[in-house]
Length: 210
Image (tube, rainbow, N blue to C red; front, side, top):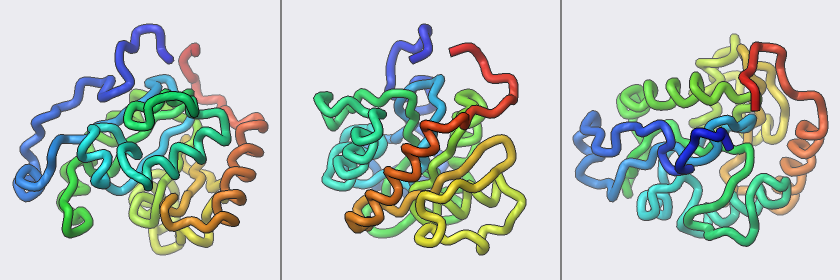
């Protein structure tokens, strides 16, 4: 971690009482901002908090889907398997979402994604990751639209699962939602990402000292 980082949870001190989406203010338990290493090479972006993240305040934590996701990171040495799954000790990883609040009955609207976009853009700018992992179709479409030259409809998370996609300043490695992956898809993604980690993946774009 960065020597100046005091907490993995919301390390950039983003607004935890955000009022920008009134409908979500009524349904959320808390605002779920990013979590992890502020100097991470690997940024994972999901669509929105699930029930576990809404309860714990930590992305990809607090429920079975989160534990499935954390097991994938553990296989790559990116998460300490002995740490509390509600507050995982991730390594060289930052976890976040397109939107920061949960609605129990529906996915986020385009307006809600737009309202949260400044949070995500700020995290990307401050972390300056090498690899962005869009988790799920919605995250892939939004990230690809912003950070590649191809239209969103050219991307399909099942077809692109584990494939390295060149972006503007980043590489994208899409992932199917962990709870929806078969054992074969988990293995394929882990093998692909392990190969990427073993390669010279860092870009020459003036990265800060680590």
